[in-house]
Image (cartoon, rainbow, N blue to C red; front, top):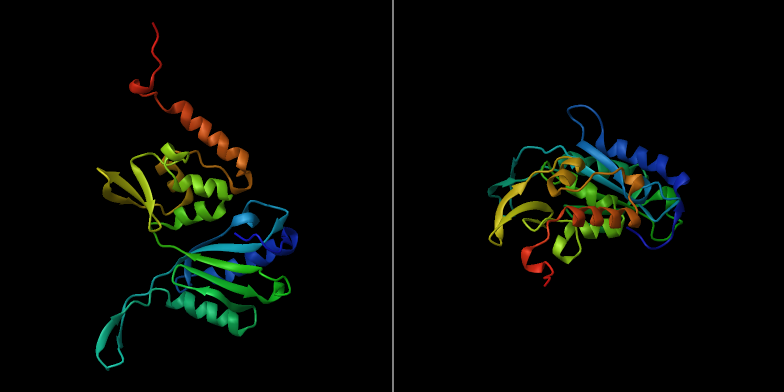
Length: 230
């Protein structure tokens, strides 16, 4: 989420949809299974500082390869199709490689908007277990994203028996991870933490406070915290 130069959403949202469609593709040989435009574009903000797209790549099987010593090794090429599509779009002149280039996040400079300093296309890469989590967090706004990662005891929305770490939602028991909760869809993530799902365009700072208030109203008061009379 950018705090730099802003561009009118009207100039961006169609371009964002085209980029999403190119990256996801279609058919059994497509680079991705799913993809979603998130962030301020999805929230229909009038001005946006970047375009965020969450992708669920179509994983390729492991293939044989050689290391520097010529020894046969297993290499994970699960993002090979997506890598090839990004390289293709760069070669076409649609994008330029940006300052972040990791397995889970990439920043690219859109040629169409490169005259806007700092404007980026940000790609966030998930899997079948956390695609929904990432969509929820990248849709924002930042107040909601922070609340989704924080326990109710610290003003957040997470139940005390859940924790969000390493990009995944975990069920906790005795302070240790008792199991990963798979969230293929954004609604699944919200349901898992017991929070009402709302469309991205309705997610505002005020809505975050409303969700907190609803959770507090549902929470039973602890006997030890009840006021004493008499």
